[in-house]
Length: 128
Image (tube, rainbow, N blue to C red):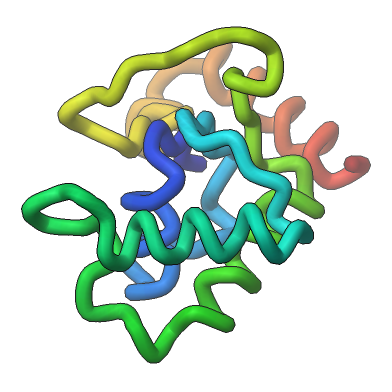
């Protein structure tokens, strides 16, 4: 399970299949967007594709607009998109953008308490 800290960089990793969208627990986005609003989407798309950065986040993805929007809508509809700016917070950009929510399986198997917590998490996750 992964926690993302950058909407643009995490979405690119999902598109490029570096990260499976099913492995995403949540993405905490600095971006404030309604994925179903065309005006919002167009602004984000243009900004990440052509933006004022020397190396825009989505450079080279011109042919993948529909796929990127589908990823964003999926994250939003599945409750995997948290947008702190909608609540008045302004998180800063970090040099890394993926965190592992859990230690590697080998560590879980070595620790009985961690194994029990992991098993309980999987039961609850399966119910939701």
